[in-house]
Image 1 (cartoon, rainbow, N blue to C red):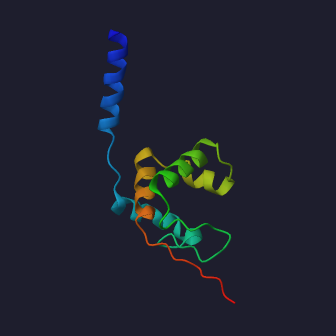
Image 2: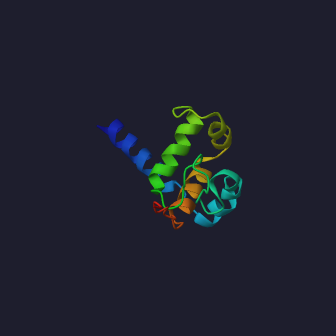
Image 3: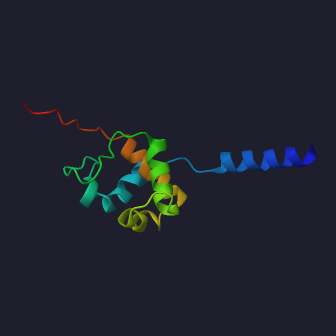
Length: 107
């Protein structure tokens, strides 16, 4: 029982100690993403997904998956590889707060 309480306490401490995301820092990091995804995450190319307005948790998970290799894309693996946990959280926060642009179908 004591071991379980100790484990729970340590886990809670590290979860609380995690820094919160910083969208302003994410905006600076996002400059690396702009050539493919657009400066605000609204890619103009159908080749690259729009990141603006996506859910923060989804974006963070995608970056983690590229970094770990769970999601395969050589370009994104290279981009996500050097990112810290804080960088990932900051980028996800920034892009999730951007206004996504819709593309209505044209007749």
